[in-house]
Every structure is written in structure tokens, then in C-alpha cells.
Image (tube, rainbow, N blue to C red):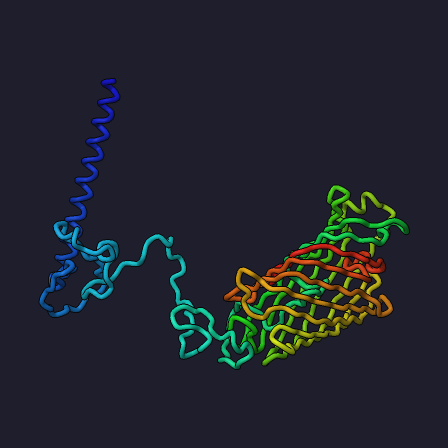
Amino acid sequence: MKRSRHLSLHASRIALATLLLSACALVVGMAGANAQSPETPLRLPSPVGTTLPPEPSPQPTPGLGLPPLADPGLSGAMPDSLSRSPSPGLPGIDPLPPVGNGPVVLDMPYEALPSASEDGYLTPGTAFPEGFDDLWAPRPWSWQIMPNNLIYTSYLAGPKEPRFGTVWYDDTTPPPYATTGQEGWLWDSTLGGRASIVRYGSDPVLHPQGFEVQIEGAAFVRLDPQDDRDLRSADYRFGIPVVYGVGRWQTKLAYYHNSAHLGDEFMLKHPTFPRINYVRDCIVWGNSYYLYDWMRIYGEAGWAFFTAGGAEPWEFQGGVELIQARPTGRQGSPFLAVNGFSRQELDWGGNVCVQTGWAWRGQRSEKLYRIGFEYIYGSDPQYEFVHKNQNRAGIGMWYDY
């Protein structure tokens, strides 16, 4: 008990000595600062309700950054804002940087938001869009690095478009390793996206215009939920589109590489299944046009300068999309999308994909989230099974950014 009381007394003495040393250091530091610049008086903020006669404003001394001190006797009369932070309007005082945001490690200029005089699409001081009435109005063009939106967006019902998405569906056709029966439930997911790297053009929230270089990539993965969720196959795609858009019309000239791979678990369970090395290195020319703000039609042609695994050079696809063009709010809005895809190695056959459901569009970007129903009839979108047909229907969700 005595030892405990002795330790407590010892700790109290150490704490008291620390406080005294800190107070001495503060007094010495303030005296030294005042001695270095005697011509700069220390100004106290006026208490509420008190009017002081104006005094001449001395020139601040470079390097002096002392915050204003409050008189303890007046602290009860001072407003909260003065007691918490220095006022940038006080003469002779350089306000200290704000605290709580972490260390500043990149001390360099940054790009501020455009003012109302530069772009009327922004409400001054808030960057909140007010130009949704005319989505296609011409706006100032400038160079932009990694803008937040896209001039040419992915096709909603395109089976090989990069995005985040997943679909659970039932396929009524036979599996690829049999000639009879029904495939049953499968799970297809897309892990990827499309982004803008550099643009010379406008920068509204929706439907920018100008020249743009994009980058795209995705992994298209199929799992078998009826067989331990085995990886059945995976296609990989990477591309670089160069796009141009003006008004309601957009065009793109793109390169993409696509390769197909059979899943390890599938090969172990079906060792006699013939794996193919399906590869396409393709040049694509596409065009898109908005007949209405909510209705888009598109078409594109692709020619592969390198093929393998049974792939042949030409491919074509086109479609139509009906979806709310403006921010939807929490309630969302319905959508409908149809895509047709035809390829030379299938004797100009292919597949048709129909999607419908509910969509939500972001308020300050073109980010789009959808849930709904999907139906695909025709060639399997997984190129490892390029000569197998599907007749499938299911539910899914998709996210574009």
C-alpha cells in the first residue's frame, strides 16, 4: 500500500515538473519571437459587443506565424470561431494550416474547379450541375488528364464489354462435353472497366465532347455452381480505344486483344475435352448516335489481323439502348437494351442478348448501376466454347464507371 502511494506521488511530481517545463518553454519562445520583431505588436481579438478604435496595420514580418491569443478573462465572451482558429483577416497574423487532415506530403499546385465564367454548367462555389436541360450544348474545350466520364461508353447488352457485372442463369442446351441433357445453372462474371486517360474536349457531368484516349480491360469468368463452383473458363480482354464525339454522335477506332482459356478444374474433370487457343488481335471501328436523350443506337465492325484457335478476321455488332440519360435519384428508372453479334467463323451466325430491368445513374458522374433480367440465344459468349450454342435466361447486375 505504501509502495503504491509512493509511486502515485512520484508520478504526480513528474507530471507537475513536465507542465512547469512546458510553460517555461512557451514563455521563453514567445519572448524570443517578440524580441526578434519588436515592431510587430500582438493583437488580441475584440470581445463580442466591444468596439475598439482602429489602429494602423503594421506590415507582417515574414516567417512569423503566431496564432492570436485569447485573454482568459474574456474567454466567456468570445465566440467559438475565434477561440478555435485564428482569423485570416487579422493584420500581422499568418494563419496556421488546418489540422486533422494528415501530413502534407505533396506540396505542389493543384487544379481547381472552373469558375462560373469559364463554364456555366457549374453553379458557382458548389460544382453542382445545373445544365441537365441541354445535354448536348457546346462547352469550352481544354486538355484534361483522367477525366471522370467517357465520350464513348460501353454497350449495355454487349456480351464482351468491359465493366463490373455478374449473371446467374439457367441454360437449357446440352453441356459442351455431352450431346444430350441440359446444362443447368451457371454463373458468369465480368471483372473490369473502361476509363478515360486523356482528353481534349469539354467536361460536363454527362456526355462530354472532344477527342479522347481510353483504356479498357476485363476478365470474363464462368463458374459452375452445380459442381463445387469450378472454374470452367475465362476470357481476357485488353484494349485502347481512340474516340471522338461531337453533339449526339460518337465514333471510335480501337485495338483490342482477346484470348480464351479453359479452367483447370474443368480440364481435370474432363481430360478428353479439346482445349482451343482462341485468340483475336482486332481493329474496331464503331459509331454511336443518340436519337433522343434516352435512346442510343450503335454499330461497329472489327477486323482481326491475328487469329488463332479457329477465329476468323471479321466480326460485326449493333444494338439499341433505352435508358434515362439524367441522374435518376434514389427511385431509379427502367431500361431496355438489345445487342446482336455476328462473327465470320460462325458462318455469320452469332448471338442476341436482351437485358431489361431497373437502373440508377449517379448525380455528378456517368456511373451507372443496373439490376435486371438477361436472355441470350445463340453462340456461347465464352470463346473456349465458340461452336456451342446457348439458350439461357437469368438475373444479373452491372456497374459501369
